[in-house]
Image (cartoon, rainbow, N blue to C red; front, side, top):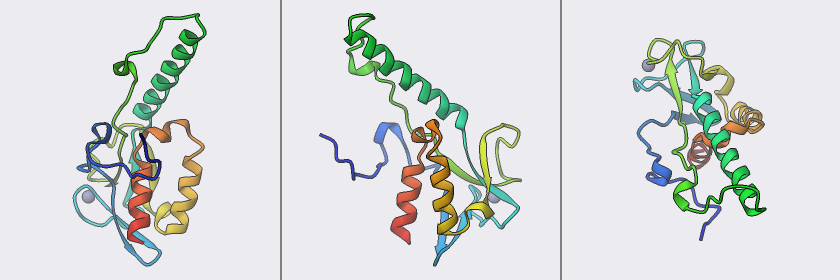
Length: 151
Ligand SMILES: [Zn+2]
């Protein structure tokens, strides 16, 4: 039994709250908080996620369901064990100052904080991200739900 309106909870698919993107809301304005605990002003930091890992999860998941479909039509190897289902903890979004990012040289997906410093801008940004297959494998739903609850 699965309730669609149930938000992600710590422990869900091994996901934790330890490394989520943090923020503060003042009316419509969003102040992103760096992993160092200090606010990020425009031009000094960004919001980022490892889209390569999320993309790999997306492909694994796609491959699993493709093979399962083949098996069901009698053309492949049956994959019926629950343990075969490739569940992963969602890949977290993080906010960092440029100087605090522990992996500044990686080519992870990122946005400058000024592109998502109001609820309207974040809405636009989230809509844009939803066009990407891999985004389902990140904790964006949790981020948006937390943002909505605090508004
Ligand atoms: Zn910082």
